[in-house]
Image 1 (cartoon, rainbow, N blue to C red):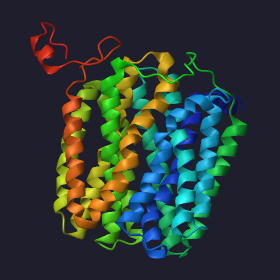
Image 2: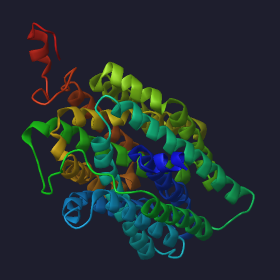
Image 3: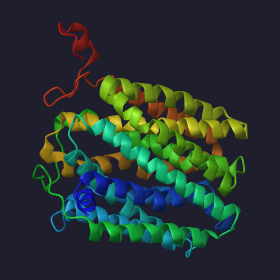
Image 4: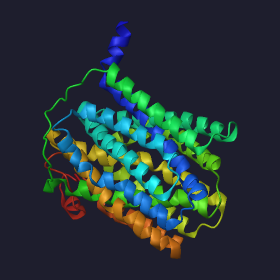
Length: 401
């Protein structure tokens, strides 16, 4: 009995359960979406671009979370957001029309983006700077194990039981909502170590973090929207085959995400992000030139392998930020992340109709800009030493860059 009480009193356990609940709904939605819209709603690149842009509008408006926090606590908002995510996913299969999909996608997206913004804030508040990289990596690994189980079950549902899209969406969303109820009832409210600002805050000294976040949003949208769409539209991958690719992706995260977090803690954010961006440049250029289905699938897996390194942006911010800014800055950073995300899918959806390769060349360009920006991260970022220009590092007697 004491072990149960102790388990419920640990914030890390609540974060873990949240990390399990989110992929149950969102990753099933992501795995089925492209086949669903192509097979049952006859989407082209234009419609999928519009849908994905609409999906990112709530992300663009994530800064409004700080106003919601005037009414409810962060932990409460996280749980309610997960429930809304589950509801949107559960309803998706019941509205197989263009505007029906737009509606359920926006509903799901409101829950997803509010949850992600608040979860990031809670994680950075509840974890120390020393433990954050490895624990965040561990949470990614937990999410990956969950995704492996979820995708395995989805593959069985599709191949063995031939369940409909409607049933799969409803099951995934329903499980997420049930887990939200468990989190609401089973855990106490965990107080923040530092009282958070409840106003919007933009600080000039965070400008590099904002820039890295903006470029990350633009670049990631190209992968999320068009890489999977390429697999379905050009190479004819089925929903079960896409699920297998997702399984491979999350096997990697399960095996290596915590180690990647430890590597970031040891080698620093600049090195980790530089490695990621160099790899992404190569992958995006390869996407633009690929004409073989198996090679495209390999690129999809390789591309996803770099995702775990992106936690270095969060740990960089944790080191340079005032602890009171975490809640406000989480919403602001999500908005900045989605400025490009609102525009890129729809704009590049038009480009896709004329030249799919050009879409991925744009992705390589964003990765190159990210690589340049990452060189400005100091070797040891702290408050007051947020940015280090290369020339100042070369001239420094301490060599601290």
